[in-house]
Length: 154
Image (cartoon, rainbow, N blue to C red; front, top):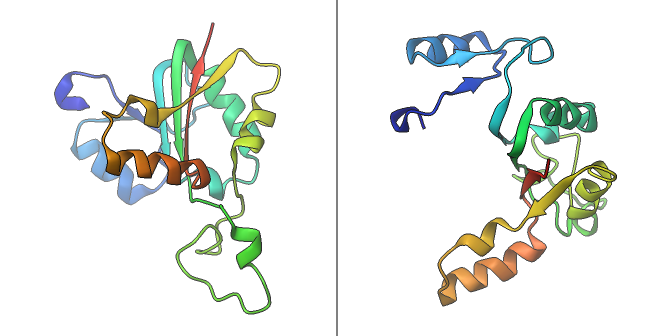
């Protein structure tokens, strides 16, 4: 993104990662609540499943979004997780493991968090060029909910 002349900001707390960010001349915002910056695109990858209060963080991100802005969130797939969680459950790389994953998401949970807001949930996969293999992926993604693209309408 930087090579395409986008202005990039991160919100990173890890000192090791902050050093890397600084070495690469990227702006880091330590306190997003106090920042006056607003954004056209907010991207979060594998974060929301760790948050104590994801709805509060979503509210904060929404407050930082410009008109017609986009929020793209990625998180572990929780499809069929309840069925798999039983007395014989063995932690693997899934929605619960590592054990720091305290949230699971589905389309219903995001619709509830966005209720009474002027936002649209966009279908990311519809922008792909059609071919049979990608069509199968699209069908699989109906069940494998692991990302969401949200657009602020006003």
